[in-house]
Amino acid sequence: MAHQGTIDLRSDTVTRPTAEMRKAMAEAEVGDDVFGDDPTVNSLQERAAELLNKEAGLFVPTGSMGNQVSLGAVSRPGDEVICESDAHFLHYEGGSVAAHLGLVARTVKGSQGVFTSGQIALMIRKGSEHNPRTAVVAIENTHNAAGGGVFPIEEARAISKVCRDEGVAMHIDGARIFNAQAATGTPVAEWAACADTVTFCFSKGLGAPVGSMVVGSSEVIKEARRLRKRLGGGMRQVGVIAAAARVALETGPDRLTEDHANARRLAEGLAERFPGAVDPASVQTNMIYLDLAPIGMSGTELSARLAKEGIVTLGGPWPTMRLVTHRDVTAQDVERVLQVFASL
Image 1 (cartoon, rainbow, N blue to C red):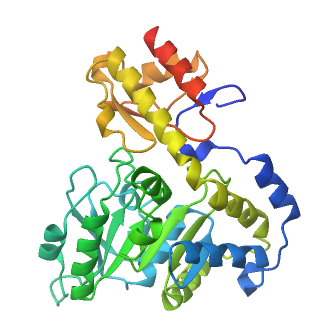
Image 2 (image 1 turned 180 degrees about the vertical axis):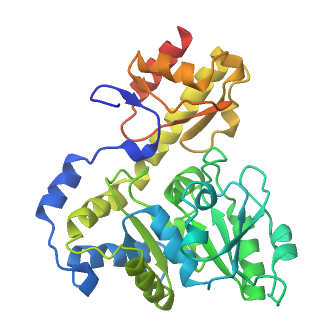
Image 3 (image 1 turned 30 degrees about the vertical axis):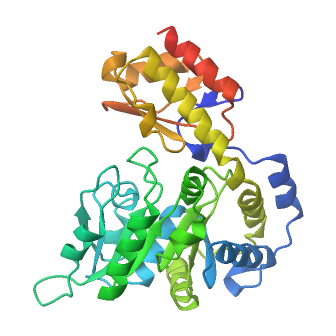
């Protein structure tokens, strides 16, 4: 269990709200969001839509719900969603696209989470009595299972063109899309221009305690709001958490480069101590996937050893371990982690 003074590298979801966020939460003007009259939520939705150059936004409690209402708003049961084989919503969101939306997931193998417009052009199906209709193509940016890799904007644009030519929707699971912006300098609105729906999380690198956003056309967001209610996501005086999300949205994106720099420093130090454990050149954002073979320990053993030194990680019976930097991990913390690894 993480506690004060530990260095928590499990995820960027572990950040605690800042004093500015807590103050905003305490002072938030609220209404009833189901009735559409919570002014803090409405302002946040409008600001998010403005940043991503979309008509409307919808505040949801989680990124998983954001993906569900986005995919559901542009499909019907029995349709298929084409996604990368390691997509987060396919493996880490409880089977929701099947259980709640009735969608068939058709996977395409990418390279570090990235597939091509050529692959997609060969996979889109119009639907018949024999096979499902392709309703939506989903990309993930940044891609969690691919080590926080950025989906190249030019490839996203090419996939978008294929989708539009074929009358198929495009969704971006942009849980960490502001990390992509920080890594490349490409504004999030340019990726959003490729898609019908985009989700992003406030509770990861941006540092808010809870909440995600869906943006799209007014028509799509109207349907997404209906689906949010169906899934139990209709919240009431939710301005108290939207206020923290607004602070995160205004203050979080610019400082993500610090997390990226800390991840690169950590990767370089680990590569020097354990050659082959990680390629620093592959670290594009705030995630490192360690190959445990050069370290000579199982994930369970390594995690236990690190915990004794106040470093919290996710270790298990897997050949790799993910380390994630975030706002609550400083450059000094990274040096401490490297000292501990050097002593193993």
